[in-house]
Amino acid sequence: MTRLQDWVARQAEGRPDAPAIVFGPERVSYGALEQVSNQLARALIARGCRRGDRVALLVPKSPRAIAAMLGVLKADCAYTPVDLRNPPARVERVLEALQPRVVVATGAARELLAALHRDHRLGRAAIAWLEAEACDLPFPVAFTLADVGRSEATPVASRNGEDDLAHILFTSGSTGVPKGVTITHANVRHFVEWAVRYFGMGPDDRVSGHSPLHFDLSTFDVYGAFAAGATLYPVAPELNLLPHKVAELIRQAELTQWFSVPSILLHMAQGDAVRPNDFPALRRLLWCGEAFPTRGLIHWMTRLPHVTFTNLYGPTEATIASSYYRVPACPTSDREAVPIGTGCEGEELLVLDERLDPVARGGIGDLYIRGVGLSPGYWCDPEKTRAAFVPNPHDPSDRLYRTGDLARVDEQGRIVLVGRADSQIKIRGYRIELGEIEAALHALDALCESAVVPVATDGFGEPALACVYVPHRGAEVAPAALRQRLAELLPPYMLPTRWKRLERLPLNPNGKVDRRALRDLLAAP
Amino acid sequence: MSVTGGGARTNGQLLHEIRAIFVEHLSLAVESPEAELLQSGLVDSVTLVELVLSLEARFGVSLPFDSLEIDDFRTLNRIAGLIERSTAQGS
Image: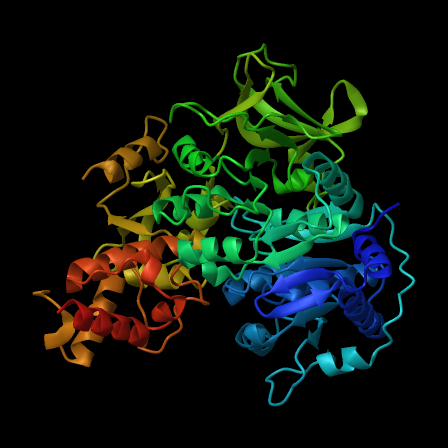
């Protein structure tokens, strides 16, 4: 049995001085990471955390945040990293669903916590303040970093097993309420052990930590590095703004592995940040979260002939990734689709029809996943769980996860994605339910009607969110004001960047909003 | 060299015009010259590209990506400083 915290404990025992995390000037050894997380676990247990409790993490990406994740696991609890850029209203909904015993926070969450405390939205959760100073805070704290430092640093006798929840990650929900995907230790272990073996990761690896910690991909960054005894280099989110800064980090840190959503890779291609034969230490580049437009992939592969390129695919509900495809050679045409490949060890991808029977090779069907990565379900939502995780008609003890993606199997037996069966889209790797944005728009009283559609942009093919709206008669509504009000309800990546005012929305013969007509309208110059 | 550079503008005019770019091109209402733009997520990688292109067009300056620093975009005041420096270099 391996629980996620056990990988760090093993490294701390055998190679305590080896670097676990390098973050700017900060360097944390496996020994130090083990000790701090032990201390935090003891502080959490002393505050009443028990097996099965949830702990919300309001801590920006940093070694401290990762130590907090491990501390929570050692206290037999599950953690939820919360995106600090979320407006208080959305954080409130997550906390309400989660009912955490403790909220772990640092200075960056001060304003957010103050707002939640003022509105009595923290429930019974105690605040663990991971800063040395706690003067003049507008909310009470249960313990501080100084208290953590006074706790004993010896290992905690954790009782959690592989089937206990390790974390709950919240994604966009179509009805306007974020969904919590529950993930067990075993879910993560299966993928990580396979990936470490398949990619040949080891202690000399220096791996990127590009994804935010509330995002499923980061699970592999963190635990892949720790399982391999490698060094994790978390990438500060601000670096994403300037592509040449990201390139500089890969060069200077001599990263051997890069894993991210394709959008930052496209951004770097557009900014011409990658030179021919750049990043000599880099061995492998992996992406996940959405399709990497072939034009962008060609840009990267022609510049880095010494690197292997692998497409990983999988929704959060099936843990990190369920299939892989190592691109054998640089595609020769922009129009060549990159397959998502075949199932990782212990995972199977199935293209099925509406009766859950296999579709003939080449035919399009719904993509289902079965196997060891499948989440137990959505947090406290049996209805959504039943709808997405269905019994396998060929084996009643087995479950299938319906991804919502449409796919076909090509001549080589590899899966190729062809689109979505619903209105979920991906922007910069974030899963976005258009319904969640529209629910927020409907809550604004200035608007009579509104709809959100993805529209193509110039360059490498990243879509933008466009909102069309019809104000109430006589109401004066400026896009900047609408965006500002929407920002009180939604995280920044869900905010439309293009706005168009209409007198009425076009309808199709069924009386529904005609989204194709809207897209055509928005594409017109 | 630059005919529409920020040199002839007062700092207040410059800020006013940058603020207008945020409203017109990015649909963003920035509340004050010192409001934090990056950590809040108001400006992300996509909007930054649009912002830089709009700034180049409006002020007739050249802002090559590999010369930019993240700190230049933290607040409207910092952006105004960037434009002033770029104008001085270009003229």
